[in-house]
Length: 251
Image 1 (cartoon, rainbow, N blue to C red):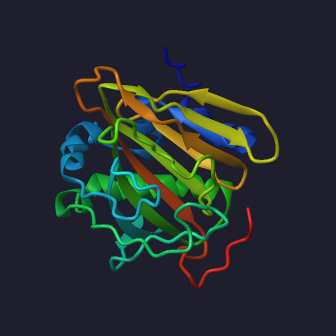
Image 2: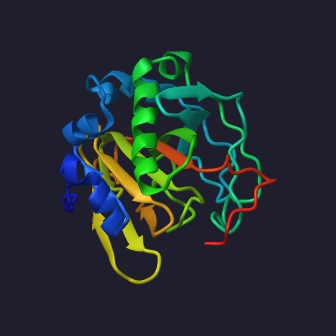
């Protein structure tokens, strides 16, 4: 049994995020809110079939594959930056924080797709509606969580914040999966929601200053087959990328 997400109409997106710290859009709503021209995740789904293994999992798991890229967005202009490590302080990621994690870059076909730039520019517009900034520093993560180990953990660090302003989680695909429930909680108290994203192209937006989030482990429905959950996660931050020289405020 899965709980349906509390969908937000695109026209109410910004009001919903300001009031609750999160919003969920179905595929059509996400396309409208970001100005996408087609079903990009249907076209992009094959890019998740060749993700390299995550070599930095500190729990010894083999269940996560990923790629990573960084961009600076200023208005409608989206500029890729030289490939760089992903870094988080221990204050935000007790399991994997404090180390530079190098991942393979996005494939050229995905990185050069004009709709990716459109998606990032659209997200930056919504981030700017929350907090004013001349430019946004975006990190793009392709994730595949599978059940190679019998169970896959989308967020092995548990409920967390990312140390950014806005987090966008797009569901790309679910295959033979049970679990993978999304949970969003008010960072100041016990209030929260739980639901499962099942529609490819659906989107969770999170105001990282005000809520914490996590996804529960996945298991295969058919134990004889492998299961996986594919997502595209984009984070947007004012002032610069998180790196070992940055000094983010404590959560």
